[in-house]
Image (cartoon, rainbow, N blue to C red; front, side, top):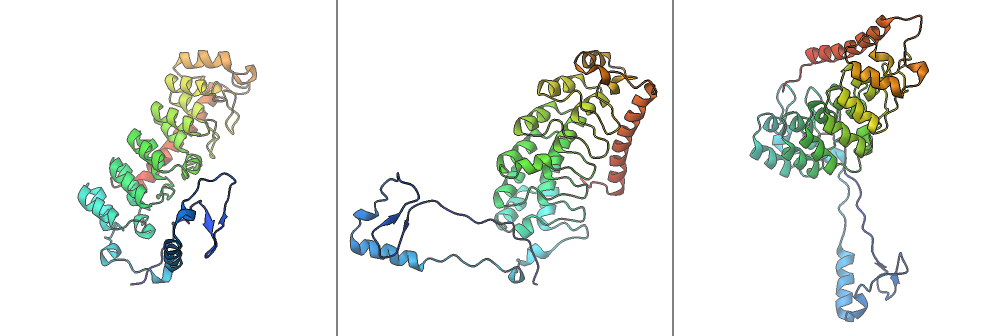
Amino acid sequence: MTMRYMDYSGNMAMDGDLRMPGKDKLLQSTEDRNDSGLDSLKEEDYNNIVKEMQNLSIPPQQNIQDYEPEAWKTQANEDGDTLLHLAIIHQEKQVAEEAIKRSYRDAFYLNQQNNFHQTPLHLAIITDQPEIAAKLLEAGCDPEVRDYRGNTALHIACEKGSLRGVGVIVQNCKSQLPSLLQYTNYNGHTCLHLASSNGFLAIVEDLINLGADINAQEPCNGRTALHMAVDKQNAELMFLLLNYGADVNRVTYQGYSPCQLTWGRSNLQIQQYLLTVTEKSLQYLPESEDEGSSESESEHSDDEYMYDDVCISVCPRRI
């Protein structure tokens, strides 16, 4: 059966000296270059090397119309799960590793999504199998693929508080990391937002050190991670974010600073500290508003989390 697939592979190049066939002179890319040793070869040996190099050829890029996967790679159940999906779900490590080994650089199979748009990498993070996630990434899976909620595997690791999951993705995705840190899911949350809202301080700190935008705002209402710290009444998270330079005067799209969101809330430590570092015009609610405005902002935030729950109930995560 002929199947279409997306080529995720990149071109590889190698720096070095170039020699024109039959010539003794090297085309050097830099002035300072160590002797390659070719000039000391006998003429016969040199000619043999030239002949071998001329016989070398790079196989042409596989045409998507010519992709013929092995039979077992074409099989999927009613949920869209392939053998690799199922091996990871049921934590059959040996089967999963063998399937990954036999799918090395097969981007189509490694990135195949089930009915919930979950790739094997998503499932490896969900089921807390970082060693399988590492093998998938080494084999060439794409860490930027999103599931039905718009989450990459890194989003899921941050939402779950999986330090090992975050670590595996970070170590194996150096080039994609800036994009992964910037991506928002379909609720407008970055990885930093998810780690902050769930109170995973170690992951929050790691993400910031890796380059995550500490002042990134949700598209829906403009909350930053610092606003979330107030919403969650998490003083430790607030101090961590402030120590890393979070903008205490950044306002939501409704015009509320983190300090203004403290009114009507129980944690006086958070309020008292923010009052000392926030611009005076952003410390108190507008005169035309009362404490209910702060509660209204909180209710809006809660609605977003309720929306998350509704989304999950409509499209429940199976694992």
